[in-house]
Image (cartoon, rainbow, N blue to C red; front, top):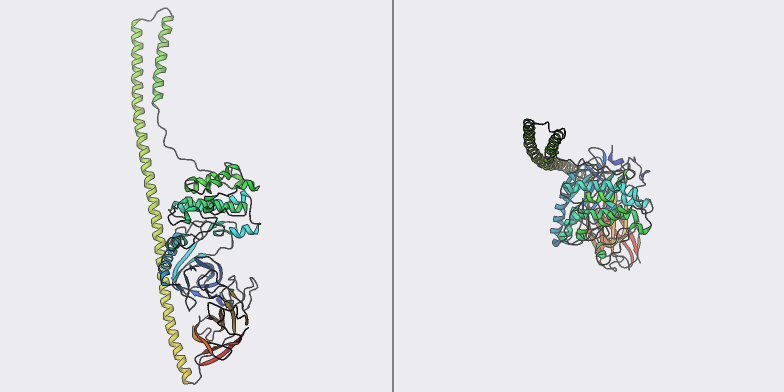
Length: 599
């Protein structure tokens, strides 16, 4: 499939159309926010980025296309926007200051740990599938399988904000199953919420976005790293003791949100005054036992909560759970039944009673028994007593054997658990080796790409030499489109805003002018293209107020190039009223000018 014919909004083939008929994405649309990578950016020589699927406080997730395997992907980029921004090349991620460099590096290492954690669940159906992990542009990327569907949050919004208890339990049960597996391996999720639970087109449920990176950054830099309403009290403090009970609270809060349409009040507020309203008080139908389990899981104090996900899952599901999709509980294995000593004693007493009864019958019949018969009876009783004693010895031996078998069974169980842990360790080592192998392959491809780039540069220099000898002049580069925005200049802030595009601005509102340029790739299908543009910001009186040099680059396959420049001040007033212009120059040639008005 030709990547040039793919739509960057949905990764479906659009042909040569400027606007995709499937999703209405327009080719050449710039990123929505300055910190996001441009569509058609290529990572690791094999991943083509499309539109942004979502951006949080600690990362950006892009729609992507695998150029080698022709498949749709989702790629998550480590980008803690409170402490980093993009460099001038619009690709490299860098800390905002030296003071934040350690925080950024610490978060980057934890992001890698999140990738290794996801790799341990490669074949688990309830957790998103991780396909690759690599570092580039001063940051790191997780490559995941793209699943058509929606988040639980979007699912609830489509249904008026809430659903009944039965459907909510059907969705949350696979989440609890997945978290039990996570906890079994000694890990925590730390960020369960409706937007991290995903439903595919077949209503299969998957858990997204482990919170290891944001939790680590909070501990390191005190950045806010939790979702209000879903985070328990221990996540609000760096010294809070976290465990499976932490995920129990977030899971219960997610279920409460699905039932009531609102998340619980924030846990610190509940510590002062608990305003949590039981679902039944809101006229929501829920079995009493299930409601009690839900409210216990939402206890503010850790010791009042369920200590494991299994306890919460068992308590919240009705005993007769067939209609709710419940699963039968497996029977417990029991040890072999031991012989009882009291059976031998009872037998002895029974034989003694029979003997005395026989003696009584003989006495009643007229005293016909002789002393010899009495002696025979006594001998028989003694014989029976000897047999019972032997049986007791046998029972004691059997009981000893049973105890031995029980001990051996326990030893085998311990060995089995050790083998399971060893197996898990081998799986982790295998995944680590696979990651190293992929990294080595990526390095090899990168070296090959560098060789190809050097060869292309040699060819380009030869071509430039021929052009100079033939007096053909500078390379032909043109600007075909531009967009002007009123921008607040906050590169790394979540509150970054821009207005436009426009060509008319108010002097009292204009702080920074953001200029986005686009043009055709003059070396399309021939070689990679790079150049430098000089933008001169000229005031109404003709004075050049600012000169900015920006890089222009495009892959050999790319049809267009895109770059941006900005100038202004933190406070309005840098732009005088009148007719301004931006002259665009390249290699001593004036390519054109952009006019705009400030009033």
